[in-house]
Length: 481
Image 1 (cartoon, rainbow, N blue to C red):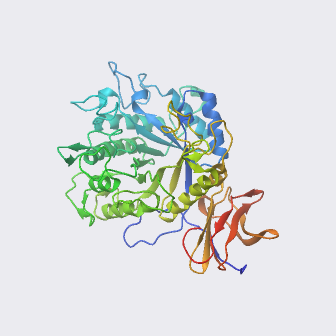
Image 2: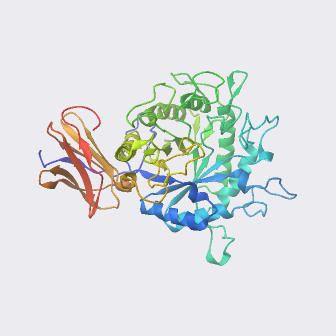
Image 3: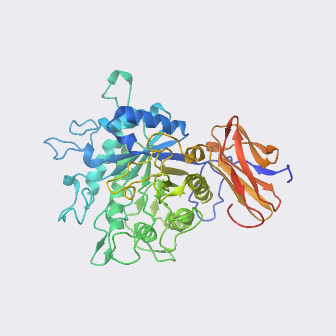
């Protein structure tokens, strides 16, 4: 192998969804984690796992904001839902989570979901049809709550737990709902065979956008990430994400024909939950679904909407992947073997990054406990087992590294644990030998292409005493290693 390499580091800020004709810029990648401990009432457990999230080298943490839990069950006389200091609100748990994240250098992403009963729409069916908090959440009420939420975390609101200590931390990212293409999160999705969920969600999104920006002009509003798979028939409980996005942004059919849109959708960041059934390089079977390698199906819709004034404000939109995971075996016998679990994690980050995704949130930091019937209803996708022992995925998250063979070359991609220089190495019969010395770019992302022989070999990245998991470069020509 030639030791001389055609190497380059990525040196520009993220730019995910481009306007037509724009030239893609090299970019970084932010990594986030979700975990139920982050939002739990047990402060000691929360602090322990927030610390572990930082040690895993996460940039972001996803914090669920259960509107129905923070708001009063019944609004008392004089209640002002737009006032972050109204005593009827219970912010204690969320305040603690935001403080804990900020204290560890983690950026919170606040995801609002589940309306209180008094903020749902009229003619509500039973909870067997529409789970609590999902029936026509009223846009005006959501706007009031969103204003209170954003105002509380501007970075200047006095911390009620200790007013003399300074303000509560500021928050930049606010997500409006999640998986609103599923009936377990938003209802109704259909009326008389007509898709209505996206139109109602657009009103919710716009109300939240206006409220958040009124309270904090520097904030960024994220569209709720959609579930990746849907029912390709009218009236189903899962709307395919491509259908939902087209309707949300007033576009019709595969040709994305613009429709009348008196109230265009307003958001700063597009989002999706590209959860995979198969390997991260294998796309969804239906062209209406969007898994990890299919993000282009979404970005083409967003670009078209931006170009036609149906996604405001004008300008390119970043895209975040808000939920990515596979279960591992152990503990779930139906999951992936541990090494493959780690490899899929790293490869999914690369697949998403190469399609322009700016941030990826992995679910979860720690395995969930099994349910009454075993592991089927819970996730064993953590970087840690339930007992706190790290899996190989922990190393893959903190130092992801991917090798891909192309025509006459090998692409080596990853994200370094820290800023600065690193070395890419090849395994030989005498041990690890250097291939390339280089510096990581923004958000510590690096990319290099090297001339390569036809034979298989193993490569890794190393920074100081930290080394990535090795990646196998397959022999000969072909696709992913």
